[in-house]
Amino acid sequence: MENSAYGEAQFSVYYEKNIRPLQEENDKKRRKYIVMFCLLALLAATFYPYLLWRIINNVFNNQQNNFWIGIALALSGFAIILLSAPVYFYKKTAKSGGIMQKFAEFFGSFSYFFEKSLSPEVLNNSFLFKKFDSVIGGDCFVGKYKDVGITIAETKTMEENYDAKAKKYKKRKLFQGVCILLDMNKNFLGQTIVLKDKGFLNVLNKHGKLHKVALESVEFEKKFEVYSDNQIEARYLLTTAFMERILKLNELYAGKSIELSFMNNKLMLAICTKENLFEACSFFKSNVNKKQAMIIYRQFCTIFSIIEILKLHQKTGL
Image (cartoon, rainbow, N blue to C red; front, side, top):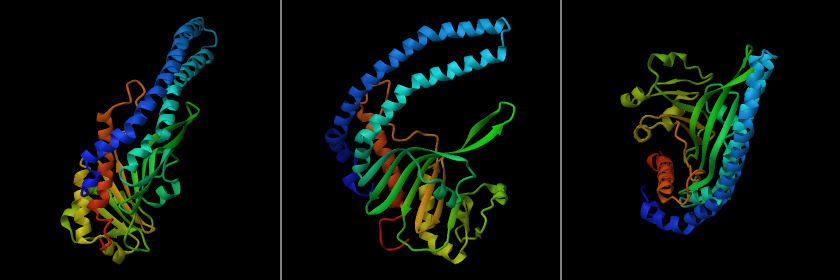
């Protein structure tokens, strides 16, 4: 990163003082949850095979097949929930206990929230997402880096459709990744979005009041499509220098879809990735793991480098 104050050597010292003690504390908690998990696994291993055998026996004897199959599926689901409960509650306890906030505080002043996302209203208003029915949040950090306000939120958007045959709602994942909301150092009134170029499928893009913007950068046009409700303002925001920085950002996230929305004097980035970020608390192995801490440190560095690449921390314009 630009500032050596956030370098790996400095983080290594910070890790030993601020993060390792929390890893050790979480490891003590983890052992208690492991005992709980083992007891539940033993309970399931003792009674579940017998109950399943009885259910299968009744099915073969043609005793209300659908009923017993339903019971078998319900028991299977209950067993999965039962065994996953200690893993979930350990992760929630460990992450909310301060370790995630300490990671982020190396870079600035931050607050951490477990399973929180940006509001559905903000996501909808960005015009970066297909119509969704629900949002699932992950790790969320709110604070400032180099005096730039930033929210980092792992996000999944879901579509729900009713399956008449199965008589239940089925969920389908539409977006998985990280959403980053940044304060801008320029004022603007309208909205401009920068979408990944989809070739001939661009004709399917419909964004209400937003219309396509033609820009001078041929290289940028090959990678992105721009839509806005204010053509003049769009060009005011997307200067030649700023487009070059977005292209550099696109290279940084090679292989991942990155899209942007300028709205309400903020910049939102939606980065599509299946990678589960910020995993500082392992259930089945020791949490005292500097190697994993360094991975998380680099994940933060990559995200915060967005501010530096786009020069949002500088007050000299875009």
